[in-house]
Amino acid sequence: MLNIQNLNVYYGNIQALKGVSLEINEGEIVTLIGANGAGKSTLLKTISGLIKPKDGEILFEGQNIAGKVAQSIVKKGVSQVPEGRRVFANMTVEENLELGAFLRKDTKGIREDFEKVYNLFPRLQERRKQQAGTLSGGEQQMLAMGRALMARPRLLLLDEPSMGLAPLLVKTIFRIIQEINDTGTTILLVEQNANMALSVADRAYVIETGRIVLDGTSDELNQSDQIRTAYLGGH
Amino acid sequence: MEFVQQLINGISLGSIYALIALGYTMVYGIVKLINFAHGDVFMVGAFIGFYSISVFHLNFFLALLISMVACAIFGVVIERIAYKPLRNATRIAALITAIGVSLLIEYGTIYIRGAQIEAYPGNVIPDVTIKFFGVEVSSQSLFILGVSVLLMVCLQFIVHKTKIGKAMRAVSHDMDAARLMGINVDNTISATFAIGSALAGAAGVIFGMYYTSIDPLMGIIPGLKAFVAAVLGGIGIIPGAMVGGLVLGVIEALVSALGYSLWRDGVAFIVLILILIFRPSGLFGKNVREKV
Image (tube, rainbow over all chains, first blue to last red; front, side):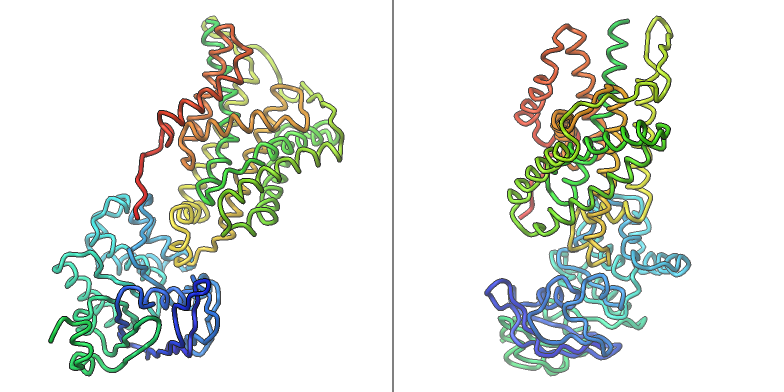
């Protein structure tokens, strides 16, 4: 579904991604793990069109979307839940969700998706008239995810959904990620919490200083000594 | 009763400031730029209204509409040519450009039509004195107030209920997050300039009708005062600009009523200094710390 070939991205003179290649098949959850500053968010921003790559290809369902404007990428069916949630704090929960469906014109479908999102996150329905800025961190994460789902994406990019959340909430969020995947949405999950990420993902890539250094199924990586010491806190 | 009359005059003057201040505040809210050329868009609006009425003999409402549409287009052209290329430049570069654009419009207008003052046709809308409870109010004052309030209600509707309004609020809060929703940020910014400039155009026609004389440099002082009004209400906050404009108009009218009319312009800037010292985020602004 998504096929990235030899992607190079620069911030000024600094190269943030060095020849990254990565593949995601339809229906999978693929996780990208790595330390702070390794280039995880840069990769997601490049896929979403917020950053233009210097060269390389990003093929989404066969079409090269590298360097396209963000708007057209959302339209093709790729939505992102950005790091730090980035909800529109000065708008209500409902308005945030409406903005998620900004490019859609099928009023009926949008209404159905409101139902779906409210079923997935009942808390959002309770708070739908509330300003998003007044929500707790976990609720904001739910809102950011619901907002992305309102675009009815086929590929959902999640950037650090567990960041800053209590362990119990992290579990809930990951359960919901699994549920979203079960309904047919392909997911690329960026995480620092490698344990949790590997527990839901089918396959994983490890990124270090802008380069993919390892990839394999989640089971393989779970058993890799290199991963255990570097990312899973094992010995 | 003199006091109440002055109060009503102040409110009508203030509603003109508010219309201009809205453009300042909306543009600042979305691109963090103080568009100093905004007062000159107001001037251009006054002239377009003038020519519509005196040369093409259109009625007031048609002139108002034409002026608003023309200014909206003018505002978008300014944004696309002068500001868009500087979107990622430093804020001071954009600010200096805005001052340059302002001078270009002022002296460009003088170059094209000369610097002479033009007298607005006075009989565009009936000017009768209405008396109630001993207060004498000119029908023009009430008319100005009515038109301004109507435009502000329309603006509130656009900003809160329409898709483009929601896009504007989203972009002003977080540009990248807005992009991730599929919002076309460039078009949204242009729409903001269009709406702000249309309001300035409307203010220009109303101002011309009320004060009857217009000239190519007429935008400077009302523009600066509207900027004060926007800061007074809290720059970037739409209701703030409305209230800031009205408060400033009333303060000026009261200063005149107390017999210090020569001090009127000065007082506006004293208000600016005081607000910057004691409440820099304005009446409606929250003192938010920037998260790192």
